[in-house]
Structure formats: C-alpha cells, structure tokens
Length: 326
Image (cartoon, rainbow, N blue to C red):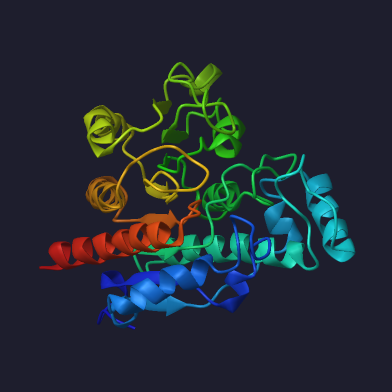
C-alpha cells in the first residue's frame, strides 16, 4: 500500500474473483482483461503507490436496488444451467455467471462505501462499468449494472442526491441514461461514438433528459474516426455543465474502446484523453465533492489500449492527490 494517510491514498480493487467476469477465451470481453491492466500497472510501478483492495460480492437484495427482481432471478437460474444467452445474443450465460456479476456489483458498491466513509477519496475498479444492463435485463456484455446499483446505494445508505455520472466509453451508456433520464438528481455527461454507426444506436445530442430531468443530461456523440482534438473541443462546454451541477459524488466510466485500434469501434482517441478527463474530474471533485471520484474500467477490447488507458486513470488520480497534498 502507498500513502501514509487514508485521505491521501488511491484504491485499486482487483483480484481473481473480479477477473472471473468474462465470457471465455476468444470473446472480446475475455477473462484476461484484468491481467492485461495489472501487468502494465506493475511495469509502471503502480502496485507500490496504490492501496489494493480485494473484491467483494453483492447480495441479490442489493442488486435489486436497481434491477427488477425477476431479472436477478433469471440470472440466478441461468447461472445454474450455465448455457444460453442472457440477452439477444451478446451476453452468454456460463456456470457461475451470477456470482461473477455479483462480484462486479459488490466491488463497485464496496469502493463507493469506502470513499464516502473517508477511507480514501479516489478508487478504480477495472472490471466494472457495465453500463448497458437495464433495470429489466442484460445487454451488450453487461449482466448487472454496477453503476446503477452504486447510485441507488449512495442515495439509500448515505443520502447523497447530487451525483454526476461521466462516461467516455465508445458506446453510449444507455442502461444508466434511460434509467435516470427523468431524474434531476443524477447529471450525466456521455461522450461516445455516434449511435448511427455503433451499438446501442442511442445517445443523440438532442437527448437531454425528460420531465424533471430535462437539461440534466448531456450526450456528446462523436463521428467515427474522431481524434483527441474533436474530444477536447467539446470538453469546455461539458465541464461548464458539470460545474453548474455542483456534484457531491462523481462516477467515471472510462471505457478504453474509444482508443484507436479497438476491434469493435471506430473512434481514434489516444489514452491521453483518459489522463486528461481524470485530472479534470479530480479538480471538479475537489471543488464540490470532497474529492470523491470512483472510476470503473468499462469496455475496451484491445488489451494494450485498455492497459495504457486505465493506468493513465490511476496515475492521474495519484498525481492529483500528490498535488492537493503538497
């Protein structure tokens, strides 16, 4: 562990139980993604600078804070059978899929609790950020929506009402967006590849929320082939939007499939975007949220890309802690 005080540390949640969330060798979301990240983290010496926390597991009742009980039961049944699909064909069932998905949820919820309790201010969970799962079902490699469960837990257990969700994964975070599109207490900023060219086909710039939530959501679709310059041109308006919201807790889904060379997407960003976004959100969190920032790995199917991007996120957190502590 690094950091002499709890307030000055960055926590990274990882372990073999978390790596079990994957759909077999050859699947884009394979079980080797965690090792790809951690091998690069060790090459950079990050294991000596962070506090490592082992995975935790969520109960069915905790998962049902966001999901419909019938979906939870359906996954439990499929987990026992160990075959078939949990959605239209992207998310296969396997023996123990419930336990693997419950570990993702439980680890993210544990990280959120530790942050609010003051054990640390910033944390990263690499195998997490499953933003496509809806309240009713699985979708797009996502069995349960750990982000949704974390949002509900922050509200239920800690009374936090002004939560900011930022998503830079190449895919629109539809599972989070549509669950909260009419909720003014959750602000959303979502950078993604234009849905006309990529799954799930949603997240147009005109989608700004509904009802009481109108105006609290910001979708920023990027054209295929967009580079860092295009992202950075859109950032100032996005940051001003976040600043006006004055969040009390920030969730970042930092998918690496927006980086050039990903096998299933078409954006051409570099891993420096992940460093930039994390630095800016650390500053925003310092101004409004007592420094509280929880990042989740999200997508990313080119292993060197995800390793570089996620390590940049952790390094940016460490740099921000050092700067604020000096």
